[in-house]
Amino acid sequence: MNISQFIGAYKDMLTNYFNFQGRVSRKSFWQATAVNIAVSIVLSIISGILSNILFVFAYIPSLYSLAVLLPSLGYSYRRVQDIDKNGIWCLVPLYNIYLFIQPGTDGTNQFGDKPAEI
Image (cartoon, rainbow, N blue to C red; front, side):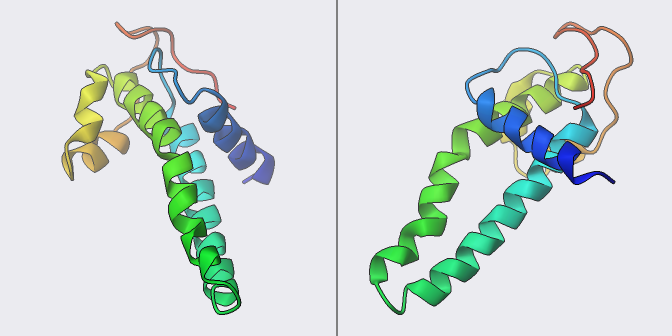
């Protein structure tokens, strides 16, 4: 387990924030999700400490969540396309988790070539 792979997946999620074309591998998706959750936890802890000093710091986790909303949706959308389903299924609660854990299609599918590992 290499931390640079996790950071690479997270950077890919953030830099391709408006990209709803193509595919994202299961491994890259979960690595980016793990970093996203870790950043959220750290920001929440920092916000909890600093909000006692200045109440504005209480909004840091919410602002972060808003900032990564579109990149997360794009990554989720492309992850669902990796299993050869329309990406809109990523918006269906609970079923989307089932889709996220499914292995991707080997080779090319209707949404593009098999994604390269980051």
